[in-house]
Image (cartoon, rainbow, N blue to C red; front, side, top):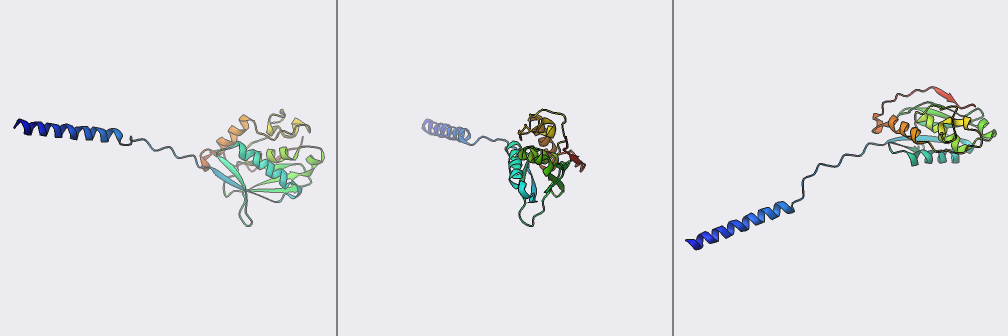
Length: 191
């Protein structure tokens, strides 16, 4: 009987060891990783941007390199674009956003500022900033993209500063959940 008890005890210890080992090697339960914020994609149409298509592409790249919540993509032929870019002979101007997917805003890339010597990439980035919901910050230093023409013709900085980037990120929140309403007011960048 002692032998039977010993065998039973040994089997019990072995079963307990296996259960403990299995529990220790099982993958620990973890909370699922939070889902990344949905990114808002806005399409632009530069088919009427004439000689400023390269400047527009450079301005788009500036914003895409600086933002996480929103990205600008060139609209495919026949695809609806939220941002229309049109070259004309006046001063650069734009409808104040933030434009939302399915919405509509226009940027006029005015040749008058280019004729006076203003940097085309800075103009493009500045005007796109209006579409993303940034007002002018005039007068202002060259370090502020939204200071526009008040920074002078020697200013070629196309980069938004930290406050400008943060405001656009907040405008778009988690994807379309941003709370800033679309203005639609036309902002003219004449000095």
